[in-house]
Length: 382
Image 1: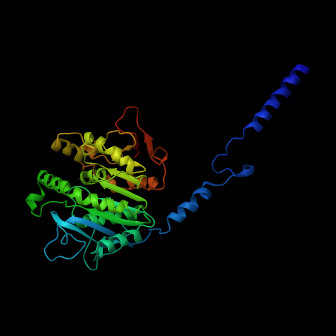
Image 2: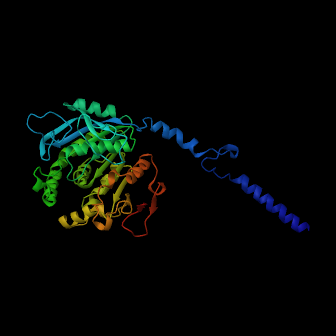
């Protein structure tokens, strides 16, 4: 009995000494003395501070715009398709578009109505436009509006100017983004004639030429944006990558990342060429998220047209969070749509919102890990 009692005493002594030797870190939400705080006590103050503007009512969104689209002769800065066309211009025009964003519309919706008495709670509408002529005024305006960060949007193929303005405003509103909004618009869109507009192959080729011609002016525009040294959230769609990625790769590598989040949405860009620019992107951006889909019919068409694999069809790269969204945006039987416009949808914007808040990909809602050796890192769950 004495031996058994001694063993029990020794066991309790060892446990006591072990507890004293190393005190484990308290789990999140556990305070001193074992008091438990609800999660909202830890998270709510930061979220409430960030979301000072709730964006829960019809609102006017001011979008800063810089574009190298051509203007009709004697045209002043405007925010409609009549103001800027689909051909490259001789320089860069800058200004501000004021857009009505209605509360009674689906997330991602940009249905517009320019009639004077249309319901402003249901339809997007251009409320006004103002030009910014001088470089110094533009720099001052950029800096003034980006004190809480800057959301930059670069659109894709076959997008007219007015649609690009609406899309930039919609993304900012649906994200409840609290900083400035900047649209960088390049000369994309269909030809004016009906027969020409239905020939997508010809439109694709002409847009691709415009994309190449836009690399140099966009290099300067992006250089000016990054010189602000404010948090930049850059989102690019489709053929816009053929403008933006070479422009970013041409920038001198900074001493620290200047882009807080870089979102690559359905990138119509050669996968084999991406590795050549990826290293520079990793120097410029704190995190890179690539949304892709093997079900994207636009990527299938682009691969046939360009005779190479496109980045938006999913390809894994070091230092890039590759998220396959095919499960949330799959064309019905491959014919119900392109499966290419997910970048402005509820599912993807929900993920982008979490990324902006700093949540790593594997911890975000509706994300699951992909199988080993898959062409993506994660799937966005339906």
